[in-house]
Amino acid sequence: MSALLIAAILPLLAWLYLLPFHGGFWRGRERLDGAPGERADWPAVAAIVPARNEAEVVGQAMASLLRQDYPGALTVILVDDHSEDGTAEAATAAARGTERPERLQVRVSRDLPPGWLGKPWALSEGLRHADAAAPEAAPEAPPEASYVWLTDADIAHDPQNLRRLVAKAEAEDLDQVSQMVILRSEGFWARLLIPAFVFFFQKLYPFAWVNDHRRDVAGAAGGCVLLRRRALAAAGGFEVIKDALIDDCTLARAIAERGRPGGGRLFLALTSAAESLRPYEGLGGVWRMVARSAYTQLRHSLLLLLGTLLGMALVYLLAPAVALTFPWHGAGIPAALGLLVWAMMAGSFLPTLRLYRQPRAFALLLPLAGLLYAAMTLDSALAHWRGRGGAWKGRVAGGAALERGGNPG
Image (cartoon, rainbow, N blue to C red; front, side, top):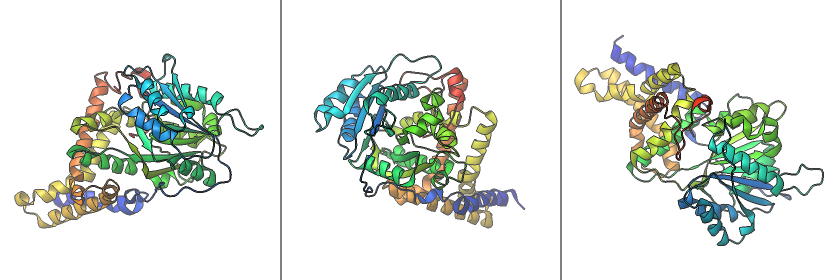
């Protein structure tokens, strides 16, 4: 058997596994954006929003939270992580333009203690305030909201999104409900790479497997996470993620393992009911987002890095390379198999492109996206080795803080 034929057969075998046997990740069937269910009672919710230098977008994000059509008690706590651009003032000004400004509380986090990263500490600070700010009505209930809703200062939600999250959690007795929000995809590079990011995330954490409580797969998307308060407490609170650069799935793992006797129950879905307000400017904008945490996802293991790079080459690059070089090698069967594999991967990308309303032609560019993400992962490792891993908003996570991982989202 020739080397070219082997180079075509190996990725074919990979896709023959991925398409039917890897949780149907590419179908994107797990959605949470329809009409919310109705309930006679709606539990109290405290939304915690960590923010650091988000003045440009925080107003729109806060307005979307304060305008939630939620019948139960809702408190929105913005935790200002020592911003230098007037984030707190922008949030307060936006609140005055809504019908429910009293829902918003703005708090400045205390100084970052040793061993904590900024976002987990801000979440912990928000929870400290939430426990005193949103008591439940029932006298036998603990003095805190039944749920905490974690969302970022650059995320805008439609008015019924909290209803959807709580109705889902209550109806199915879930400890965590998370949505992968729509990310901004403007300009060529973002249109190519952002849908691919979501595609790769679904492959890494197949949503159907996360939602199957018999499987040991825990995942979340940090932009929108609803947590049952008792499950969070049972898992150890936000201290369990205090040094996690990738905090969302680290927390999901803790909830799944310790959120209740026998393990917590998770749900993860796509949605079009919430969207990120943060633009990704050119190739560099996406590159910085991915390179910040990609090597952490690999637990800073050189062996996992090499395996990932080889795997990306096998799954996304090898077959198109065999097909495109047909004029030079002239081997018809390997080239035909290469085209078949390329068509399989392009077809699997179409549901994600439809979600992002991108042209079908971008499906043929998935190998290019795979090449770029492999390069971002390598760059993430190089940054870590240079002592610049995890740089974000003027801070660099270092030392022990980089020894925890979760997911790239």
